[in-house]
Image 1 (cartoon, rainbow, N blue to C red):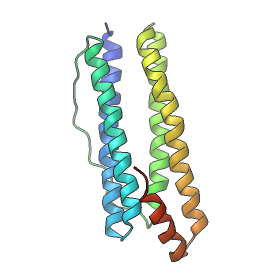
Image 2 (image 1 turned 60 degrees about the vertical axis):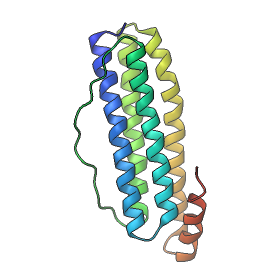
Image 3 (image 1 turned 60 degrees about the horizontal axis):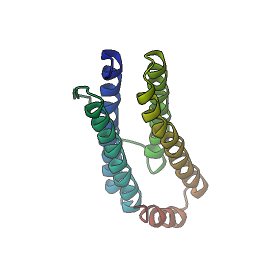
Image 4 (image 1 turned 180 degrees about the vertical axis):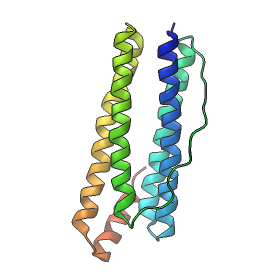
Length: 162
């Protein structure tokens, strides 16, 4: 059974994951608007991953005897600078989410909730991958610079993500 504090914190993270999905969809819309469908596709796939993350929290809360409470959240930004802006924001966002997950791990320890601590280990590993993935694309965009040919090549590469 979840403590009230643990339940509240897990619900907060569930809502943060839902916001993340909304944020990535907004980034996809930005890329569509500047004619970068491969970049948009990458963000759409990322949106789906974030929804999966949210649903894992949803299911865990229910299975642990807690109550899921969804909260409203502010809309995401809708404007970024060029090709690089959204990915720099995505990388910063993933770093923020890593901090949120680390804080959840701390709460699970403080609450002596071994089951939740173990559940969160998947997210700890996942966040390492999320940060690396976004960081890698940031570096590729920076390497491409202003070369339209290189950016188009990268757009094609990113379209392959499934």
